[in-house]
Amino acid sequence: MATTFPLLMLPLLVLKEIFKSMDLWSLVNLSVCSLKTRHAIKGFPTNVYVGARPNTFTISQNAATFSMNIEDESETEPSTEIVRMNRMAVRITRKQNEHWIIKNSVILDGWKLVMDHLLNTFQVDVNLEIVQERHLFEYLIEHPTKSRIEELNVTSDFINDVDMKFYLENLNTGELCFSSNQNKTFRFNGQFGRFKVFTCSPAEWITRENFLSLDCEFIDLERTSLTNEDINMFLKKWVEGKSPELSEMRVEIERIDLIKIMDGIEILKEASSGKENNASFHVASELYILNKDGLKGPFATAANTFMFEVSSDNEDDN
Image (cartoon, rainbow, N blue to C red; front, side, top):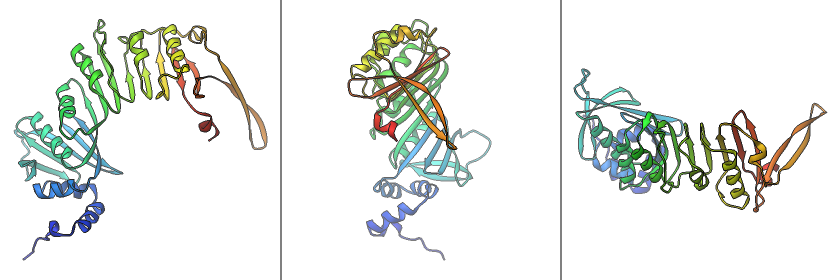
């Protein structure tokens, strides 16, 4: 008769090495065996990346992926086994080793159950993609583990003013991406969260004050109501040493006028040459500006978009 191996009786250092050697699929499977195994895995933090949608999870670690779908338990296909998540018996169907279907009478409850299990077992970075499910975002930011939201993507035909304001104020890490329409009358008078990347299309609601208050590493704004003068004010602020985190910016406006954008700002030009197959060739001049800290800001335009990057002399040398 087969006997079980007393895994949790092993010395901690040995157990740690075993967990480190396990692939993602094995760790997830072990985590739902019992509360004890989940606690054991949690004791030796494992970093995973979770892509979450309203009824789907994709769990990644290095090149390995594991997916879970949440389905209503009334669906015709029956569950095949029961696993343990947060002291709860959960019915699942294994489609493949790396794909589970989680059965629950309420999709939202199933989503929270799975997310809670992941947050309480692993060190999690989350990419949350939602349409109008603000409650999922609220659940994450209020969760006691305070796991990092690496990216919040909101894609819908329309976002109401209350939800829009909530996202802008409450994401404090990672990337915030809107691909949604807003009310034409929407205005944001609050304080932006501390996100590193901000992309928005359309971005007609962004005022000069909003634009100047952005302090991100990457800014990408399409279909804005901003003007050449607004971009000019932002660049002057950067020249003074403000917006120190900025590394790249793209802003689409109705009509680009480079003279207005660069009014009062010294433009420098850098031309270089190179060789290929022993033949010299000329590289087009690069226009750039400098800030008081010596950072270099090359810029260019394409159609109605102004593009700006930040680099140091050391980066250019490399």
